[in-house]
Amino acid sequence: MTVMLSQRYRRGELHEFEAAENGFIYLVSAGAIFALDEVTKSVLDLLEHGEMDHADLVGALVAAGNEREDAEGLVRELRLVGVIHSKEITPARAPAGPPMDYPLQALVLNVTNQCNLACTYCYEFGSDKIATPQGKPKYMTLETAKASIDFLLESSGNREAVHVTFFGGETLMNFKLLREVVDYANLQASGQGRKITFSLTTNGTLLTDEIIDFLSDNAIGVTVSMDGPAELQDKRRVYKNGKGSYAVIEPRLRALIARHKTRAITARVTLTDGVTDVIRIYRHLKDDIGFHEVGFAPVTASDNQDYSLGDTGMETVLDGFHALSEEWLEYALRGQMHGFTNVSETIGELISGTNKSHPCGAGLGLLGVSPSGDLSPCHRFTDADTHTLGNLETGLDQGKREDFLSRGHVGAKYECQTCWARPLCAGGCHHEAFVRYGDTGHANLHYCDWIRTWTDTCLKIYGTIAARNPGFLEHFAKRKGLS
Amino acid sequence: MKHLKPINIKAQKIEQSVDAVDDEDVVALQQQPAGPRPHVPMGCTLSFSPGWEVDAGGGTAGLCQPVERDIYDCYVTCFWPVQVPDHVNYSPDWASNCAAATKDWRNLDLVFP
View (cartoon, chains in turn orange, red):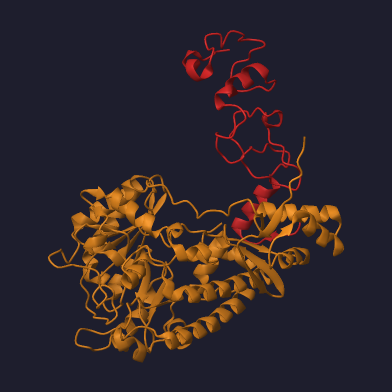
């Protein structure tokens, strides 16, 4: 007894795009990218407005001049990859979250919560702050820092290399600690036959030649928070008396870039109202000051902050982003690296085919440590009592961590379920979501359109390179340690 | 794969998994048909004696015989090597203390061949 079963096909969850006159698909359930041939495109066109029977689909392909065997083979191929689905099969679910004993990879040590600047938009001190540092230590002690290193090495399973980021406040206000803890960490790690790498974020005001040499000697990566040329930098990156910081940091940055030979030096720009001229900022930081890479992010702000980017501000920013991304592509086609970090990072994720369960590693492979030894999902939650995930002395609070991670899982974000950009976005920054919506697990709906436009732009760049200079992607993957 | 060209690492992994698919593989009863050909699940379904699987809806309520019958279908009537002792050759007495599987299943013991 046999029963002939009729298959009805529909399109899987795809984002189609064109680049260099070729058709591509981004397969949303996996984060995979495929180049299409003409006949595959015709299948997608046939299924554009609905479902089709197996026999009808194959029939249409045969009528269009394909051999029946080839048509059957094509349908099988598309079905196995998930480009088309038969009706009965339920779509892939969100990627499973990592196991709860997921080994740590990085710690962010808030070596101090004090800062010598008073940037008006600061998430740690500004009006949207969630930190409650009152009555807590202002500077991390060496004991706490050492305990953090021990905790990292113990909690990182059998990873060969772990990473420590020094953060603040202004990190260099506790340089003395930094110097000692780097020595301690190197000793502990090498004693276990493992590697530990370092980076720090600074506002640049306290850099000296001695500090720079230390950073270079220890291969400590440096990210400088700064907003561009003098008039843009001095708008909001100011001392407590309102004086701008550009004149102070400029000579120090030039010294940093000249003397620090071991790691790339990155600028990280916060875009705010009136600070939206991305191209001018990029040119200044990359070409004039000499940063190796420059990354941009719109400020995190609740509604109605005077520094928020309005819709027009955001449009200006996006125009600048697109101009720079075209430049990035031109460089790539010539086989050169471009310093616009926002594209580089997305391209890196597209090479791997990242499909995120969570927007970032916060609470997973990464934790923040406050000066008091409290653990938090990341540096942005440092000293925020409501987000504490334990303490170095008592250990990681698995219950709280699980709560944080289950809220932040992309599968828990309703609006993300129909968005094709979710493999890379996964709902966006937990901290931004909390500031905006009061819940770390809320999707960051205020930038969905922006993320989709941006992801599409990066996919087109990716497709163009794949078509015209595929060797660059291999080179890029090697350089970034992706393959 | 002939028509889709993988251009990132994830796509290459999918290609490898697709190339490894054997169309002749066993399809479980509760899986939906995977191809254009007739869906002939392995097991005893075609003789209306569902085997060790569940029914097409994923449950056990709609089987033609109670699931407890599986043990005898495997032990006595099935020619296919399964995870119960072999009635024909080595363990003819295995179920002799088990007149009604639903009540007496505790009497069934392990067999060490």
